Length: 115
Image (cartoon, rainbow, N blue to C red; front, side, top):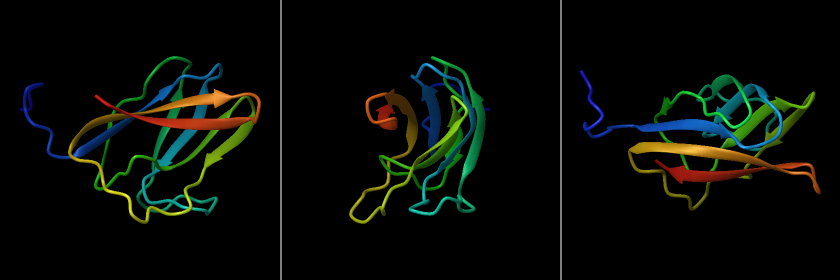
């Protein structure tokens, strides 16, 4: 059995919704790039309510940013990295992708937080 003091031997990511709307069909793909469709490495976190966080999901390799797709305020939003060239994969542990929204340009913003 794992205890809270055990070293985490994988990368676990959860998503925090710091916008004014609930997220639906929130999908994270740590290897996705410019496509509209996620790869086999994607995970759908489902619904994430305002000012709440999802459960953790374990990924084999994750970077400081990822491909995202979610529905918010009846609109689909994407974050699509061009690529991950030169990026270093995150060390094992727990992290949070905090998502905020900028109304002036109608964009999502992603911030990585080590937990």
